Length: 403
Ligand SMILES: *Cc1c(COP(=O)(O)O)cnc(C)c1O
Image (tube, rainbow, N blue to C red):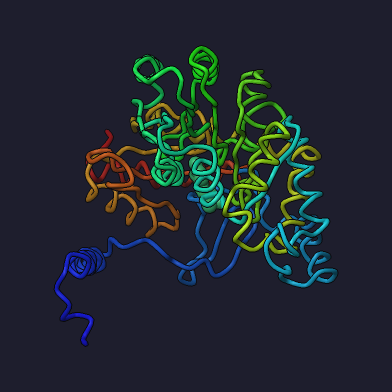
């Protein structure tokens, strides 16, 4: 049977998407899935044969390609090959995995840690293992999709509180039955807005209403705190978070996710979470690379200093030009455009001038809140950041967004 002759809802969704993509491509408004052909120093990349400044990277400390990390990965390949013998529980565990988990536990001021093969899967499996039907999860409205999916998968009652709004959260907590299990969950640094969760208040509420607190540190690991160990260090609240989740794919230039916490919790996840039991272990090169990266964060504190200086330069610069950057305090800097069309047009103009930024449009963000989502890293040269800001400014001015 001809696929295109099937007439049902999913076939109609496929056809609608194709139409949308075709129309974006016709307008030169399609920016996704562009291949990076080469990684160059100072956060530059080759794309479509052109050297561009990369302003869409999560490599906040500029660790991709660090010689010590590359060396660790190569040594691991020479010693163990490129795969494992299966899932962690059976023959897949290497001494490298145990080392990595010990490194993470120490770095996160926790008793123990467990790793998974992606951050996305870490959230799915952790939330759905801990929570179930009849339980209650409370999730910030703009939490990452992997958190939303984990909450839905758990089957628990799903309550969303307004972004970083602790009064709304308290109202929802009050309305939940007192005897049920409760989990409050939020990004530490919000992945689209760059602002920071109010940890002191959310921790107080978790305590008061007898709820677990889970924080996703995808964008704060290596970034927040004087040493970069994360949100506990930033707020000096080392015992506030029960479930400390993070990824190994952003500041840590590898792939995977982790949960750190009390030993009993980690043992429970190791024996109860399906992504650990039914999905293969992290490959040796990626485990070794991640392990080395945690050490470099502590060994090279000047990287975090450069990131902080570049972040201030970028936020203050764009704000000073008149752009709305919402409440960001971190290296994720939204440049609010409004309509999807405007975000696409601004992106196009920036990319034409070799500034690689990307648009985020609805439904990833609320309608009317489409934006560039620009990031800086420790690897950027301040002069290049000035150039990028000037490109964004000239384009924004030509489009009537700023004066
Ligand atoms: C990127 C991200 C994830 C998913 O991590 P991956 O390692 O890319 O699977 C989870 N949570 C947040 C907040 C993220 O930004």
